[in-house]
Length: 356
Image 1 (cartoon, rainbow, N blue to C red):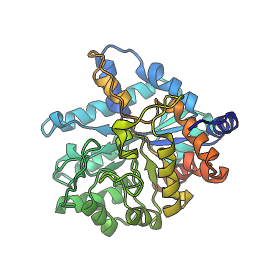
Image 2: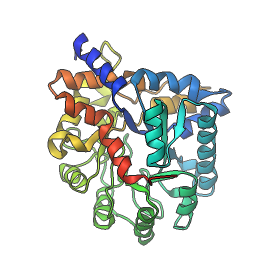
Image 3: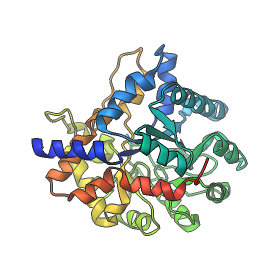
């Protein structure tokens, strides 16, 4: 898709004038890897330039645990990521940890980049519901029950590199965790849950839940993506779905895709996901949640020098190209502004505590 200069300029204006949000980045884990590899200030040197170029105001950083860290090392690994992220935020005044609406308002007013902390899977607590209070006190403001695996709380769906159905929803402890999360004020994320788990959340949750990084199963069939029925349920209860930038979740022919002149994979297919999600849920319930994995892999395997191309977009600095494509394909500017960030800002105003 060849982008016209007019729409690129308009997209950049939107990104630098309006709130821009990404609800899924494995930032905490990436920082741990980069610091281990000898980088002194990766949040400033690697991530800040791309965030600024893309006009991002708010990043939701996941704490993601790898299989080899579980079960015994899960809690230690999670705490290390949380500590490292907080240290990097304190070291760089351009950033602010967001624990409350008060923090969010201050961040937007001061043109800083806010970071919300959330758990991509609660493997680290085992089945001990009491540990949620400790995570809350550390600033964790949301969680999914599991990644694409089975733990003591729930069964995940298959990984992006696979595509097969997994059955089995929440365990009894999983239901207890959802209720305790809502009591504390945490948001519940259904990305990576299988279909049975999604239905269990629908039956249990009282507050609006969301999918931080999930696409349309109708546009690209994959069990990691949401069905139209799931998206409608999500919208009806006030939630939002964040567009995932993983090539395998965007296109069923991912292995055959090649980048365009801007270095972007599957740009039109990305737009098709957004357009279908808007058609099903309305523009108020769609946002950006890219889950950029190439930077995570680069951080993890820096010493090996082995690139791993999993993302449709190079980094956050390229996101205005997607916004330009949506405008060029005919999406109205009001809807685009909502999707780029307004929707998630309003969601977090409802879900976060008023003060820290």
